[in-house]
Amino acid sequence: MSPDARELEFALRDAVDRGQLHAWFQPQVDVATSRIVALEALARWQHPDHGVISPADFIPLAEENGAIEEIGQFMTTESLAAIEAWEIDVSVNVSPVQLEGDAFTTWLERILRRNRSVARRLTLEITEQRRIEHSPAAARRLDLLRATGAGVAIDDFGMGHSSLTQLKRLHGSELKLDRQLVADDSEETTRLLARIVALAHEHGARVVAEGVETVATMARVVRLGCDRAQGYLIGRPLPRNEMARHLARHRAGR
Ligand code: C2E
Ligand code: CA
Ligand code: CA
Image 1 (cartoon, protein in one colour):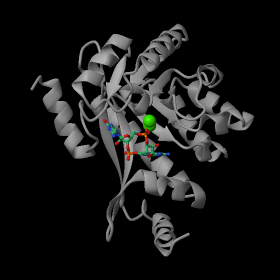
Image 2 (image 1 turned 135 degrees about the horizontal axis):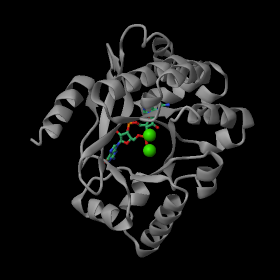
Image 3 (image 1 turned 120 degrees about the vertical axis):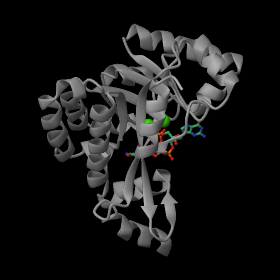
């Protein structure tokens, strides 16, 4: 490990305590109405010396050193607060590491049981589904959370080893089509996506297209029958205060 990474790993341990971790929110629109109906919470680390550090860089470190427990709890707390404040659906990313022990599930299940209307608006986004599929204990923990009314999304669908079987096995309520797949307008991929959307709908799952950057891609997403869309074309991730203003303007029709 480079000295830089070691230094970051060390600082990460108390980034939450020092108030350096923030939840940003990216909007998702209902494809049929173009209204913002949901947000994805995305972690940002405001490091005093290095500026904003991307989750792609610090989440893997956090998964290694255990800081993911605190980060995951923080991000989920922020997501629950956003649901209550803005009366909107919110998705939060959950690392398979958070499902390796009981702590996260026990904590969240207790909160969600007390507040079913909030639970129904929360979606847990899972990547690396194989790690959960291959661990009966992790799958059971996910089921406990699902039983409170929370949704489960299969993230980055189409990349790596994701499959529709996982949607079934993990009782997924949502499928998030990976950005690369969404942007690929070859005939082959288009046919495949149309089939995936139809099968997801047969399972009663919602389909969200990720990484929509252009008008042409958005038109494709509409044609494919996706339910929701997310991406820079619709809106970039914003800090909480800015998202509050953005939502207020959007809801006032401005
Ligand atoms: P993800 O869950 O697939 O999140 C979507 C990523 O795509 C975000 O990157 C978002 O900013 C970016 N994105 C959104 N729209 C577009 C677009 O139109 N074009 C392009 N090129 N990118 C777009 P971000 O925020 O850097 O997050 C990277 C990854 O880090 C996430 O990918 C997720 O796997 C992980 N992550 C972020 N926050 C958390 C968290 O709180 N917990 C865990 N466990 N992982 C997180
Ligand atoms: Ca995600
Ligand atoms: Ca994704």
